[in-house]
Structures are given as structure tokens and as C-alpha cells.
Amino acid sequence: MTSDASAAAAEPPAGSEQRLPPVTQLGMTSLALVVAGGIYLAAHIPNSVSLAPAIALLAASVLLLAGNLLALARTPGFAWGRFFEVAKWALLAYAVIGGMIEYAFVRDHLSGGPLVVLTMLLVVWVVHVPVLIAFTVARYATPVSAADPAH
Amino acid sequence: MADVTVSAATASAVPAAPAGAVAGAPAAPPGAVQRPDFQIVPRAGLPIVAVVLALLIAAIAANKLWPLEFFHVVGGATWTIVDLFLGFVLGPIIGRMSIPARVELTTRLMPKMVLIMPTAVTVTLAAGWQLASYLGTVQSSYALHGWVVASYIVVGVMSVIALGLLEPANIAVLFELKKPQPNPAVIERLMKRFIYCAAITGTMQIATLVIMTKLASG
Image (cartoon, rainbow over all chains, first blue to last red; front, side, top):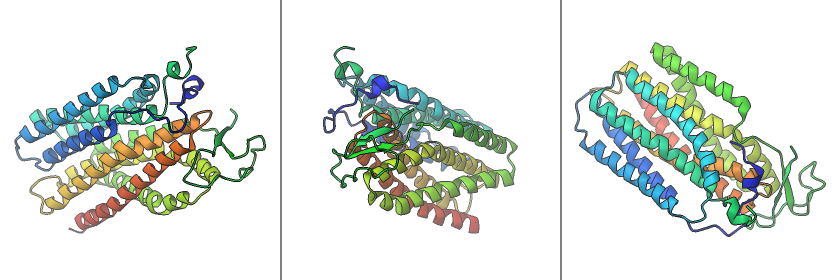
């Protein structure tokens, strides 16, 4: 995850930060919903429990994730090169961490509906954390084309 | 690779450092700060992380009390100590340091945090969950189940703050420092965010200590 000179040279001058959607706020809300869903299910082990609240939290979290990506996609001049450069490595790291958590679930013989919902909550978590990391890095960079008309 | 200079002219929150404040920076312009070259993710540390995670998987697979307890206690102690130290000891000190000193500390400290914190958190939570399964404390029939759920909530809030604010700030400040002309105002803002988040999670770690000692005492 090292920066290359061409992308780094395209940083905006101090104080010229572009107007961006509230990606961090929405992302943290989405993560909070994922965590709440996980806590709800974990707190009822091994009793059978209604999955409806966890599914509702999951659906809301997925909507926030989709909304976040959509809002970001519509942002003009966003440094997508830097965003994807960071996101791919962060996704790899958090996929490993998520895989370990999933392994612990399966190791403890979790199955059926709770396993499916927890896995989907985990997937949202694994995707949204790299989005937040990559966004925070990319917001302080600008695309090469925006900084240098020659590119 | 050559070191990089950081202009202090745009940093308004703290006074600019005197020229020549950092040894080995004779060519830097007045008000500029030299920072050492660094890797955003220290590659030398990756094999250590891989070994730790492999041992953690082995501990979970073996499902024995001692290895699970070892990983949970060591990971939890690391997580707690780092949060408390950064938030309440190092944070206030960094706030009073000159820009050159702050930049040098940041370039040496933050890459290590990129590896240490996610590893400590993963080890603590994965080993903790398996340990609780082994001991039966995750069962809703457990006498202190309310305390266990409280620990889920505390850890959940800490994880949202750490993953949503702290970790992105950590990575972003390193990318900013990698630029040929890092912006001190951006570094200042991101470091403040990092230290404040560490202070909040450090405070919540005290709640974790209360809960964990209660669970251990029965």
C-alpha cells in the first residue's frame, strides 16, 4: 500500500477540500447497525430467536452501504484511482479478519438462519470498513487529470 | 529513497518549528520539516502478523483453555494498554510537540499501529468468543449473562469508533505523509481525530476492565 509519485503529486492545495457526501457518518451508522444485529443474535445463543430484528438491521445497513456508494459515485472529481488502490488492500485485510470470525462461528456449530444472517452482517462489515478507509485517504487526493491537464 | 520535506507554513494550530530543528535537514527551506522515509504497511511485520493469526487459528481449532486464555488475555491487554497510552499519555504530549517532532513521531509510530491494532483486536475478539464458548459464558442461561451482553455492547461501540474513524485516520495520515509535499493542516486534523478516538476507546476500555474482572471473579 505505498503511494506512487504521480498520484501523490495530485494533492489539492490546503484549504481547497471538495464538498463530499457524508460517507463517514453513513458508514459508521451502517457499522453500528451491523454490530447491533450481531449483538442481538449473540445475546440469545443458544435459544431460538426471531431473526426479524436482525434482518431489519441488516437490510438498513445494506441500504446505507448502497446509498453511500451511490452518493460517492455521483461525486464529481473524486480520486477513484487512490480510492481503489487503498480499498483493494483493505478489503483483503478485512476479508481475512472476517474469515476468521466466520470460522469461529462455524467452529461453534452455528447453523441455519442465524449463521446466514450473521454471515451477511459480516459481509457488509467486510465491505464497508475498506470503503471508509479508502474514502478517508482519497478525499485528500485529487485525480491526476484534475490537477494536471496534460494527463 | 530521500527524505521528504513538510512545509509548516500552512499549519496554523501550532507554531512553526525553527529552521534546522531536525538533524540532517540542512537543505530544507525555512519553516520546512524533514520526515524519514517509511512504509505505510511495514512489510517486515507482516510475517509476524501471519504467525500470530496462524497460532490463533490453531488455538481455536484445538479449543483448549490455556491457548484460548493466553490469546484473549495477551490480545486484550495489548489493545487496552495501547488505547489508554495513546489516548491519555502520548496524545496530550503530541499535542504540545513542535511540528517537526510531531511529524517524525507520526511517521515512526503510525505504520506500526497499522499492524498492531487490527491484529490485537482480531486476536482478542476471536479468542474471546471461543473462550466464552468453551466456558459456556455465551449461553443465555449463564448467571452473569447481562454482564456478557454488556461486554458485547462496549466492544461493539469501540469497534465502530475504531473502524469507522480511528483506522481510516491512521491510514490517511500515512498517505498524506507519503506525498512529496504533505499538508500539515491535514496531518494535524487526522492526528487529532486519531488521538481523540483513542481517548474515547481508552475510556471505554475501563468499562471493559470492570466487566472482565467481574466475569473472572464470578
